[in-house]
Amino acid sequence: MTAAPGVLALQRALVWLVGASSAIVFIEPSPYELVTLAATVIFFATGLRLRLVFMPLLLLLFLINVGYSISAIPFMDKPEVANWIATSWYMAVTVIFFAMVVSEDTRARLDMLRRGLIVGGLIAASAGIAGYFNLVPGGHDLLTLYERARGTFKDPNVLGAFLILPALFALQSVVSDNFAKSFRSTIALGIMTLAILLAFSRAAWGGLVITAAFMLALMVLTSQSRAQRSRIIVMTVVAVVIAVMLIGVLLSFDTIGEMFRQRASFDQSYDEGRFGRFGRHILGAEMALDLPFGIGPLQFSRYFPRIPTIPI
Image 1: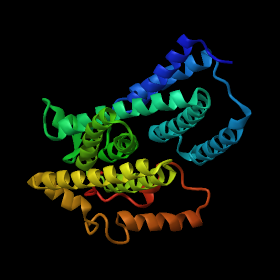
Image 2: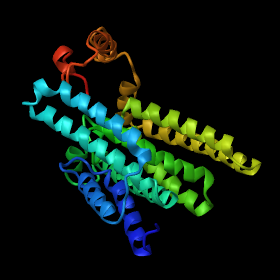
Image 3: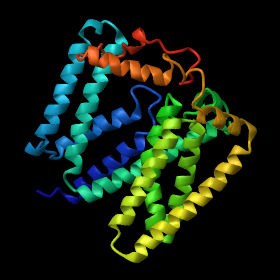
Image 4: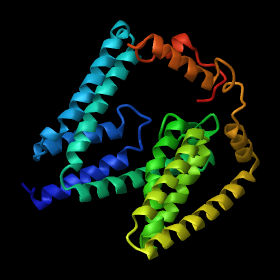
């Protein structure tokens, strides 16, 4: 049953708002959580349905969160653990909600979600850049951490990870849309890429490069014409050249260049050794073989305390 035009417009606007608000999470409850809760109520009130096809996903999410909850029973007296479990259940509910939302009016809703995420990415990226370069009074202390941009997030690494998806959407538009849209998307991509660089997150740098290469390769393989494939390849080469030139300019600044060299290196004291960042991953994997039922949420640091000098 097709909803009335006014209801469809409201639903699409809510999807856009959820995407845009996802960038602001440094306060609790965050605008994203409030908007998502409101969107859930309104969507169900306007006819959103739980179909049989969602049952496998619902069952898997239910079982994994039951497992989390059981493992956390000995630690439920700790507020951070109880909050972790509640957050995990909440995220499971939102997964089901989004799956249900995009199963209807799919093309329009996915497009609105994409647009909203790009806007959210620009908000977070602009805040991070403004904080890093101290463009707003008091912004440096609020919008940076350890001399790294964190924008509207609590952690620079989370900012970098969040910006990857909207940056990919912008890149897709740069290489495939008409000139006007491509130009606007180029500006958006530049802002988000700069923020990812200034977050100094190695995982975000690598994630952006790998996912962008994978997406562009798929776009070339699935293009329906030789002209379209040629444009994607040419625009990709141009974008890479421009990006390398801009990064070169940025690295000419002493503070940025020094932080970049520090973060790009894997021979730092908190990375190396048996109990370094990477060594603890191996120890954790070995522990998982000995304790298949887990050790409980947020308990890893009890066995392998984080070295105080590690910048988050």
